[in-house]
Image 1 (cartoon, rainbow over the protein chains, first blue to last red):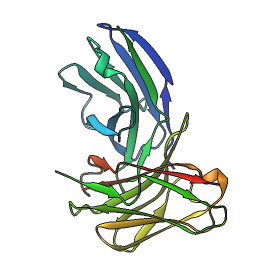
Image 2 (image 1 turned 180 degrees about the vertical axis):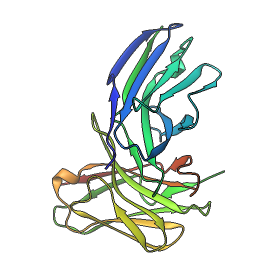
Image 3 (image 1 turned 120 degrees about the vertical axis):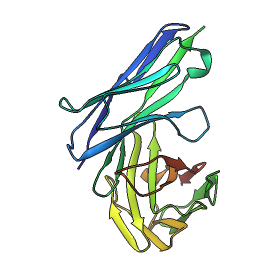
Image 4 (image 1 turned 135 degrees about the vertical axis):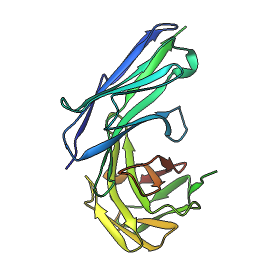
Length: 112
Length: 114
């Protein structure tokens, strides 16, 4: 089955600096890679996603890159703000049965 | 606006009890998932279902079963609750298609087994 590894587990960044979270996946049948943000006490919510036929996608201050050959994808947050503090999860979805497998999460703290 | 609703926010059960966690979605989604969330372990998939009466084991199905008799409802059953099943349980649903779409989560059920 799919195995998604995520690093780092915790990340502290000065406000205004950039943050990068990296994930690798094992199943070449995965073709959809979403990122979720979970604020304290709340449910995870999708912030950005990418499909395997695309190498990069941007949405304002966040971007995701995908290297299908190496089976890794990354989340980039620029000009970080205090409201970016949260736990971020990467995930991979199997094309055949749409099984959604998550990484272990990264706790991002933005230091004012 | 997609709504995924879990029947309880907090639940306390005794060891050995049979426990039912209910999840209902109102957007006609084909896929439904049950995860447990533990610190440092992320979201681990217990079971998922891609259609009524269809289910597949996730990564940690031991000690759990599921039921999907209607499209909108996906139930997680702990046959005989144990203390190591104390956790936050999250239900999610997604529309089928294109090899994956956005998953919408319920608010979570914090289960404590004593």
